[in-house]
Length: 85
Image (cartoon, rainbow, N blue to C red; front, side):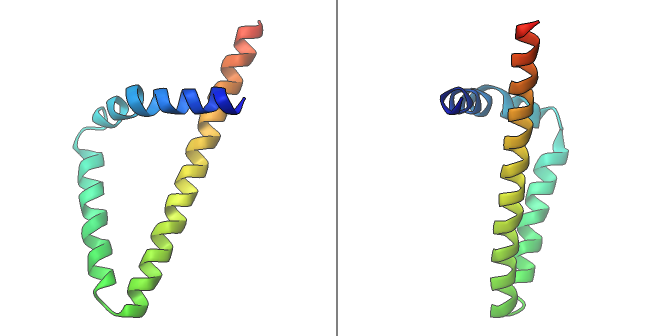
C-alpha cells in the first residue's frame, strides 16, 4: 500500500495539483502572496514573534500535509472499493 500511495502522490503532484490550482484562478496566487507578506510583517515585530510565526507556519504546514494525505487515502480507498464492485 505504501508503494501505491507513493506512486499516486507523485502522479498527483506532477499531473493534477498544478492543474487544479490553476482552476482556482487568481485566488490561490493572491492568497499565497498575501500570506507571505503578512508572515514577514508579523516576523518583523520582534524576535519572539518571529519564532512564534515560524512555529505556527510549521504546524499549519503539518496540518495541511496530514489533511492532504487523508484525502488521498480516502480517494484510494473509495477507488479500491469501487474496483471490487
